Image (cartoon, rainbow, N blue to C red; front, side, top):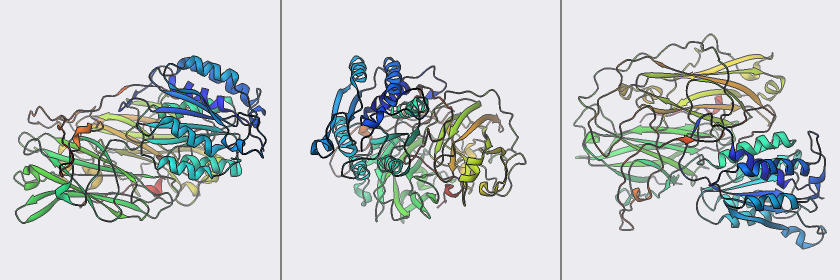
Amino acid sequence: MKRSSYLAVGVMLLAWSAMAAPAAAEEPQDAAPSDMMLVLDASGSMADAAGGGGGTRIDAAKQALTSVIDELPENQRVGFRVFGASDVAGTDPAACTDSQRVVDLGTDNRDDLRAAVEEYAPVGWTPTSHALREAAADLGDSGRRSIILVSDGEPTCDPDPCEVAGEIASSGVDVRVDVVGLDVSGDARDTLRCIAERAGGTYYDANDAESLTRSLTVTSTRASRPFDLGGTPVEGTTDPAAAPTLTQGRYLDTIPEDEAIHWKVERTVPGSTIHVGAVFRGTGGSLGDAVSVAVLAEAEYGEKQCNGASAYGIGLGARSPINYGATSSWKNTPDDVCNTANELTIRLNRSVGQDIGGAPVEIAVYEEPPFIGGLDSGPPEPPAWTALEPGNATTGVVPGTSNVNAPIVDDGTYALDINPGETQVIGVPLDWGESLQAQLDAQLTDEVRRAAGAGSGIEVSIVNPIRAENSISFWANEPDDWSTGALANTRENGPFRTGAQSYPVHPSQRTVTSVGEKGAQLAGVHYVQVVYNVRGDDANLPYTLTLKRTTTADGAAPGYEDVSELVAPSADFRLAAAADANATQRDGGGEGDNAAATAEEPSDGSPWLAVTIAGVLVIAAAVVVGAIVVRRRQRVG
């Protein structure tokens, strides 16, 4: 069975997306763009007519690719590999190794890409697994690596490409495979989706050159951003005495199977507060996954737990939920050992969920300078919800899939769309005394209502810079202008509204017991997360997101001691990945200077076409958080 090689389509679209038009938002900048291999199906079916009309798939591919090659980012290393491009009989063993790297990985290869597009012709079979393995070898075994696979049919050769995708993913947390399926359905679509999910990537549907362009636009834009979980690799130890030392920044470790793991933090100055957050991907369909994180100090009577929290989520209906939790060393008594100890221990253990052991976990560490004179007042009253009037919607913003890769925007209305199982994230700077409102407006359709089932929903929440939720609970007390009742029980099409509102950012929020309020104790970039949890893949939902910041607590900014090594939180505060030298082993295995803490700097980036085509943007494994059922819950210890 021959398949069409619309390799060029994917390649070019991908390229087109990476370049982009005027930036509509600040993009996160945590590292150089990932090295990217475009892997394109050159099987015979690429000669078929494109689903949306307007010529063949290969014609659409060539036209699109030619128009975008000039727009590839100059610093993006891109290579080009095809498979099924040789006219080999299906009974010939060579048909299952038919894959060629036609353009080497590089930044100065745009002319070579153009030439490869012109020479590309659809003739062969579909050795998907072999092509994926070869592409992984093209990218090497270090650094951030991304494979973008474009295919229109089922593989014709063993082994199972899902297994190969799992092999590629196991080679490191900094590699992923995104997949675009062109005019596919049934088993072929299931296989391509499985490849993306097993390799920590995203699956996208497309049925013509326009929708394929949009899919690859999003794919390549996200390939140039940090991945969903990110940070400097570190290995915590079961023995606290041998634990590596961390300084401010983001780190990446793995969730322990059994015993808890530990890291050390050396305080810069007495009275500072050590904040710790944990982020991990839960298991889709699970009844619950959780890790517990705690900050410990050595007291006269032995080890003392200063504070602790759990990052917990239910994965029913979700494909790959992301769960957050955060805690700190702060105690209300100034001379408490948790406030004065020179060294603190961070402990993390798997508390719920058998399948998350060995999965990546991101650890965020921030040292807040000491207050001058302590906390002067208690936390302010939470604000009341006020309905927002959506304005002229801004297009061109590509939402992130987690806090790590979210673009940063200001107040306003943004036109977006979301597919089933997807999580979208946008950052908003939030200063002392400010509260953030995020209002989602959409129009329900027959497709959306048919896709809704038990536990389905559309959820909006807000997370702070250290990965703690900062959302007022409207449970059973939704604002009058919100749509109420289960999505599955909706009987008519019409307007739909929901949203989220943060507590006012105030240093005294750390004195309360409510987890949601504790999330409002630090100024900095807060992250609005939209989760769309319905069944199937075709119920695309266009929506607008209206954001508004309001100062509800005047004089909330605290006074901080001037400590040159520490950065006081402000509206633009974000955590960058830690310097390599920050994780030093205590067993003599290495030494390094502890770099000063710095805030992550945003940079301008590529915009996104937020236009709708059902299935064009199916964000799968990396960041999917199931809506209402997947609501993150944190418990204070």
